[in-house]
Length: 329
Ligand SMILES: [Zn+2]
Image 1: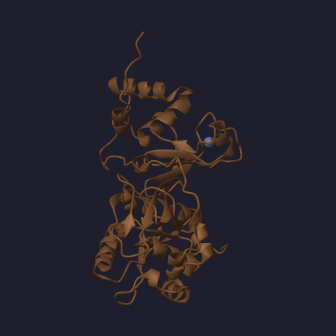
Image 2: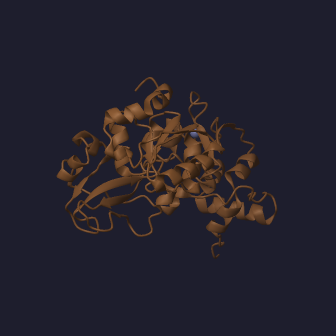
C-alpha cells in the first residue's frame, strides 16, 4: 500500500499550539506576551516534583518541558512544534501525528489557526543550527585588544581572529546563537578597512535573532539591555551586565520585538547616539512599549557603547539596570 501523502508545511500553517492544547484540554497560565506555563501534560513526564515545567510560546508556535525526566524520555530534546507535541501525546511518529492532524482538519474536527496575529513565525527554522564550530581562534589578537576587550571577554563570547579557510579567513569571528543557545552563524569582522565590515553567511536572517539573547535569558533578569552591535554587547557585558543583547544593526524587526517581549518585561534601549540610532530608538520604543516597559539611555551626541569604558557604561546605566538586576550576580 502506498504511503499516505501529507503536506507538513501546510498542516503546520493551519494548526496552532493553541488549538492543539485546547484539543487535549491542557490549561496553562499566561506568564508573558504569548507565553504560557504550567503542568506538563505529556505521557513522557514522570517527575511528580516538576509541576510547572511546561511552557508554550504562541508566538513561536512551540513548546518545551524543562523537567529532567521528560527531557531524558525524549532523548535530550527539550521541546518542539505541534507535530512533536501530538506525537508525544499520541505516542506515535511525527509523520503519523501530521497525518492525524491533517485528517482532523479535513473532517473539521480542529478549528483552523486563527489569523488574528500574523502567521506563526519560526525563527529558528530559518537559521538552522550549524553542524560545525570553528577551531584555532585567537582570542588575544591585537584587533580584539585594540577594541578594548579583555582576553576573558573574548574567550567568553568565543570571539577571535580566524586564520583558517573559507569566507571568514583573516577576520575576527563572532559566533551567533539563537535564543535556545544553538550556534546558527559566525559573523566575520574585517580587521582593517576591508569591505564589507561584517560578513555573514548567505541566507542568514539576522532579523530573526538577537545577538547574545540566549545568555541574556540565562541571566534570569527581567530586564534586557538592548544595543546595536557585537562590540557594544561585549563592552556592556564587560561592565558587569549579562542581560544584554544586540540588534546586529539599527532596525528592530517584528521577530526581534516578539523575542524580547517573550522573555523580558522591561527593556533598556542603549542604541548609538547618531542619526540612525536615534531614529531606531524612537521606532523600537514605539513598538516595544505596547508590550513591555521601555527605558532609554541617553548617550552623548555621536557616542556609542563600544567606545565607552566600564565606568562610563555603569554611570549611564546607573540606577536603571542595577535596581532591577537580580541580587545573585
Ligand atoms: Zn514534561
